[in-house]
Image (cartoon, rainbow, N blue to C red; front, side, top):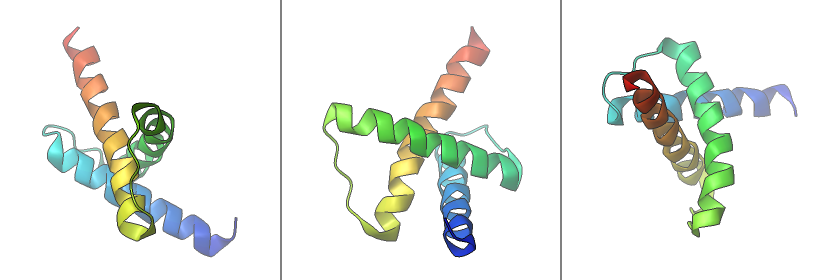
Length: 84
């Protein structure tokens, strides 16, 4: 993975984490936290979405929506664990 690919990967993770934080209110982790949430969200979505039969298109929009869905799942799971 080249430096350019790594920068794009981190930017997409940051945008996905930020958007997920806006959708799931009460979670503001800052830039680094948003990147982490977005990257973990991408792994969650990569595992979860094919199992439920969801196919999101290609391109940058699909690359942002995919980890954003996983990040939303992650943030909702964190919320449930904090309440328990």
